[in-house]
Image 1 (cartoon, rainbow over the protein chains, first blue to last red):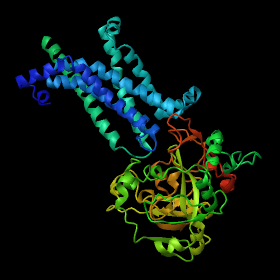
Image 2 (cartoon, rainbow over the protein chains, first blue to last red; image 1 turned 120 degrees about the vertical axis):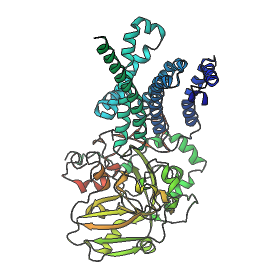
Image 3 (cartoon, rainbow over the protein chains, first blue to last red; image 1 turned 180 degrees about the horizontal axis):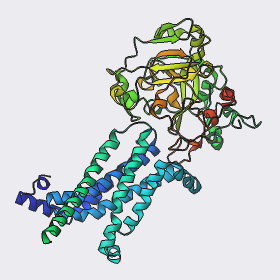
Length: 225
Length: 325
C-alpha cells in the first residue's frame, strides 16, 4: 500500500506499477470482486444469513452495487492522485462488477420477494417511488454494461462512448436516493450519510476538475486576445 | 364499509388448514403412525410449549379467549429472540439480541395514571400475580412484511384496566416505554423521539386479545423482546406493541405516537394489519414467515386484521380503513 501512497518514492512507485501490470493482477482483482457473492452463497447454503435470509440477500447485493459504483468512480481520481495510469486497467472490470451486483439485486427481488410473477413486478415497481428510482438506475446501467467491450467503443466512437458512460453519475445518484428512501421511514441515515459523503467527494472532485479546466481555458483565450 | 361486510364465506383463519399442513398430510400421517405427534397433541391439551431452558420459567395455562391460540407452526425460539426491532438497542435486527443484556429488568414498576379513579404504581411482582398467566399463540405481523408465530405468556390488558377504573374521560391509552441512556445505547440517537410512545383506543385496549405479556415460550421475556413487561396487539403491525413498558396513561385525546411523529404519511395511529392498504414503499399484501418459509418459497398472503377479523372487525365498523390506516 505504501507504494500507492508515496508516488514520489521512485522505487516504491516502480514496484507499485509492476504490481498493477503483473499478469496475475487482473485475475486477483476479479477473484476479490467475487468474494461478496461467494460469501452470500455460502451463507445461503449453510443457512447462516440470519432469520430472514431473503432480506439479507436483497440488501447485501444492493449494498455491494453501491460499493462497486463508488470503487469504480474512485479509479480516475486515484489514478490522477497517485500518478499510476495502470489503475485504469481495472476500471471496466469494476464497473461490470457493479452491474453484476445490481443484476443479482434485481434478480433477488424478482425471485425472493415477487416469486418471478411478472405482473406483480410490473405493478409493484411504479407504485413505489423508492423502487422506481432503483429500477431506473438498473435500466440505465444496461446500456453501459452492453457497450463495455472494445468493439462497442470502436463502433460508437470514443467521444460518444464517453458521453454515454457519463450516465454513471446519474446512476450513482439514483442509487443513493434509492438507499436514502429505503431508510427514510425509519430515520436511519447513518449509513446513507457515509455513502453520500463518499459519492459527494467523488463527484465533487470531477466538478472541480471541470471548473479548473474551464478557468484555464478562459485564461488561455483572454491571453490570446 | 365493504371491508368489514360479513360475506358469509369468511372463515376465521384459525379454521383454515394451513397450506403446509394439507400439503404435508401424507408425511403427517406417517409421523402420526410413528407416534411422533405426541408433543403436538400435548400442546393441544395443556398449552405447554416446550421450554428452551434459557431463562426463568413462567408457565401459562391454555387461554380460553377466542382466537388466542392459533395452531400454526411456532417460529423457532432462536428466530423469535434474534430478529428484533427494538431501536433503543440498535437499528439492525440483530442488534437487540447483542446489546440488550444491559437492560435492568428489576426492580421494575409500571405507573398507571391519568383518567382513572385508582391510579397506581404497580411493582412488577404485583403485576405478575394480578391475573392468572395464560399462553397465547399469536401471529405477529411486522410492518416490514415479515411475520412470526409466538407463544406469549401473559393476560388480557383488560384485567389491569378494570382494576384502575377508567373515568368517562378516558378514551385512549398511551404506553410509554423505558428510555434509559445508561443502558440503552441508541436512546441518544435521533432515529426516533424518545421515549418510544404507543397508543390504543380504550375499546382496543379492552379487547380480550390485547395482551399484557411477561414471557414467551414458557419463560420470562428475553430483554430483546421487551422484558419485563410489554403489550401485544396481534391484529396490528408489530410496532404498535410497545416493549419494556414503564407507564400507561389514560387520556382523552388520541396520543401522538412515536412513529406517527416520525412519519405521519407512512405510519398511522391505527396501523391495523391490512393487505389492501400498502405502505408507501412496499406492498402489504403478502408476508414472509420467518424461520418457516424457504428462501425460494412464495410469500404468503397477509390476512385482514392479521387473521383476527372475526374477533376485532366490529371495533372498526363504519371506519374508512384506508383513511384511518
